[in-house]
Image (cartoon, rainbow, N blue to C red; front, top):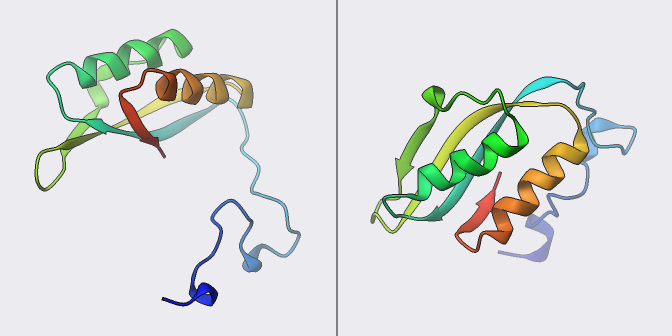
Amino acid sequence: MSDKTLRDLRRPSAGRGDGKPPKITFPCDYPIKVVGDASEDFTAMVCQVVSRHDPAFDPQGIQVVPSRNGRFQSVRLTLRATGEAQLAALFAELKASGRVHMVV
């Protein structure tokens, strides 16, 4: 793969026109996917962290998807986002747990 086929996902795509990332209107329902090593308590840990940042979070709607070889799990959920600071703090706490590899 050549360097021309790679693009930096942190940069806005050329199709947007104004060069700014899309705006999110808060509050909103915000879907995330949290990927980490598979374990019995990974989902519970993710739910505890999310509940600290969204007290109204309902874990009934989560989906847990194991990787093909069973080594990783992705926890897909939707929370009520109130602002960028809330999301940044949530992502930072999930990453600081040492058990999360990626938050999308």
